[in-house]
Length: 88
Image 1: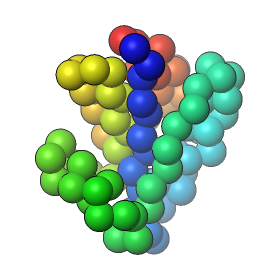
Image 2: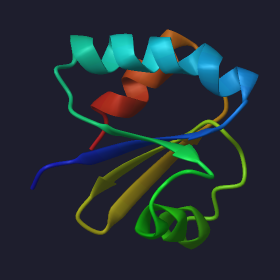
Image 3: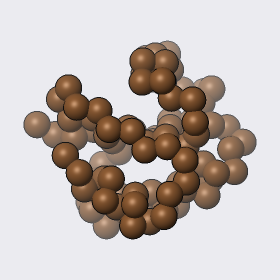
Image 4: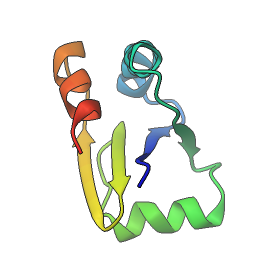
């Protein structure tokens, strides 16, 4: 089963802008596809995910594989981000 990775950002969020290039670099190194959504402009079904998974800190990255959902919130060092994305 494939893993789905979603990066949630908030419009005007400095920390989100700080993490985004690091995230994109690591995802590229791992040859990982992902979805990127900027709130509040995200589609309704994506906004529902935000509430379902209690995302209240931005940036947040969700890693979903089957019924397993892992969440990483806030700005983290590249090494932590890479470890998180390699899990599952």
